[in-house]
Length: 299
Image (tube, rainbow, N blue to C red; front, side, top):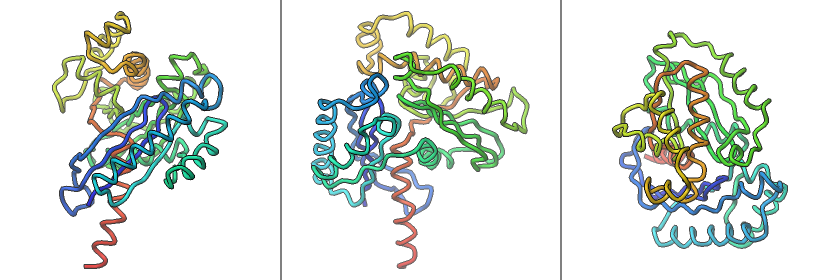
C-alpha cells in the first residue's frame, strides 16, 4: 500500500510517497519518493495578492509531473493540500479549478488551523506524555503553534508570519504582538528550565545540521542563535556554495531562524527538537488512519 502527499506551500511544492511499515496506528513510514520543486508562490502573493500566470502554469505542470510519478510508483491514495500562499491569493480557488480541469486532482486549500491539525498528526506520537511541549512549524507564509500537554493538543493557532513574508517585509507588528499574547496565555505546568519545544519544517532541520547538533538531539537555543547570526553574515552565493543550501532555502533560512528564536526566547525554552517531519507526513497519516480502520473492520 502506497500513499502520496502533495504539499503546495509558499516556497516549494512537494510530492511525498510513502508506505507503512506495520499495520499499526502509529507505524513509521518508509519513504518511496520525495520531490521538491521551488516554485515560490509566496513571492507573487505577498507582493501582488495573486499568483501570476507564469507560476500558475508552472504549478499545473508540476502537478502533472507528480501524477506521472504517482502512476509509475502505483500509488493507491493521494491527498493534495495547499497552504498560506494559495489561501491568501485572490485567484487561489480559481487556480484549484484549473488544476482540477487539467489533471483531475482536487486541491484542498487549508485554513491555518486545518494545516496545524495535520502537522500535529505527524508529531504527537513523538511526544512524551509526562512533558509539556510547544510545537512550532514555520513555513513560507505562516507559522503554526500548538501547546501539547499529556500527549494532547490543548490549544493551537496560526499566524501570518513566515519566512517569505518576513523577507518581503510583509509581517505586521500587530501579528508579532498577537503571537506573544498567545504565548503568554499558555498555562505551563512545569518551570521554565523544564519546558520543551518541537520544531517542524525543513529550515529548522537544516539549521540543526549547520549548528553541528547530532541527528536526533535537540538544538540548544543559544547555539541556534549563533548559527543564525553566522548564516546572516554570509552572501547568498556563500550560503549556496559553502553551506550547500538549495538556492531558495538560502534566501529564507535566516528568517526562519529569527522566528524560531523569537518564540523560544519569549517562552524561556532552552532547546528545540527537530524531527524531520512536517505537513507532508501529517497528510500521509490522515490517509493511513481511515484506511487502517477500514482494514480492521473487514478482518
